[in-house]
Image (cartoon, rainbow, N blue to C red; front, side, top):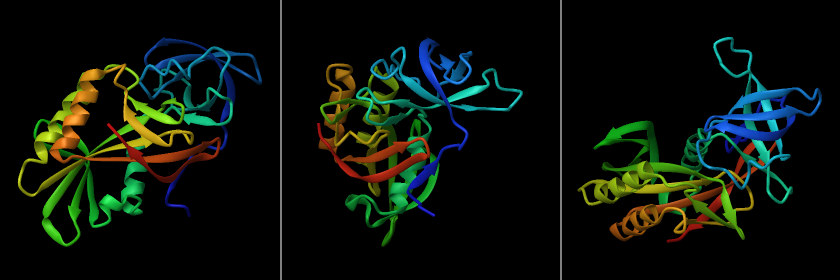
Length: 242
């Protein structure tokens, strides 16, 4: 079993994107039947470069009677039509854990995963790590999923995020504490991202916070994934620049 791979359901349905009535709902037409359906979108980002009328989206039918929507959006056709992009904002956390446990990052070779959802300060962090040879040293990691790309460069965020800026500033404060380190980890949910940068033109405050965090000693990490109808696979580590 590939420990760097997250499988998708096998019975995905082809559809074409029509519109996005709100942040968490998209409307599509099923390719096979022509039926217009609503699907849950587990990503609150703008995604305006991806959610274009006519673009192919693969959906998963959910049989849970308590769900308002019978379908969930899984992946969308890339802008260039040469691949897929994951539409699940919850997946980056799982993939980041895979990456840490598989020692994908040279900066984290001497660190071990302890737990997810760790509360410290004013926030709950995606991961807590501990130094392999020094139990007194700990690290919190905040994970972000990247889907916006331009000429191979992934950019985050794709919409203004005051919450994200707050988190990055807190990471900069945590690294000043004795016995603590911190990292910001970007998971590219598409294969054509080869480097990640802050989106200065979209959210200059986030970009400034990220630059200051790096100066304070926060580790900036990134990894790239290959997405297909069968699942999403971690490929390699990529650079993060400010």
